[in-house]
Image (cartoon, rainbow, N blue to C red):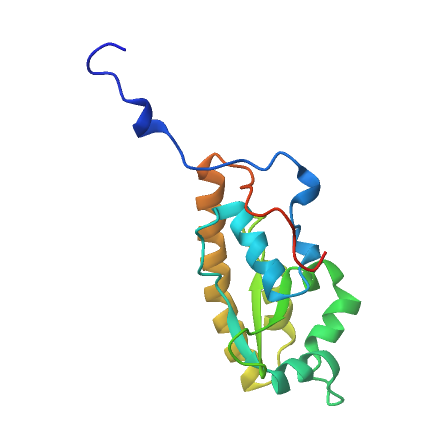
Length: 166
């Protein structure tokens, strides 16, 4: 190597790419917090720890899926706009069983856009408006993670030998 050339150590990226695509957790696969964690780590690296989420009470979550007073927006979204409904993942908080975490996948540049738009158009309560505001922050954070992932040059990180919940 001639003098002045960049060293190999400076260009070395500590990442092992997953070459078995059947081991990649897809957004539709997420059924629990552990799979959500694997999803993000496969894209952002095994050291990634801060999944952006909004926490809502189980009471509010239940009202989104099965309220009898017309506030069951997620239930309606599943029927009217299923593509919007699948943009969000709801998982139990590992810290509090009374809290549901909501986040968006980072496979697309504008995570949760249709989901948020639906809630914004159809929301009728103070909770809906506050929820949309917090989801917009999570969407921006997920967008930033999408950009970080796509600019990293690593398609998917190999992070574990077995996938939980599969």
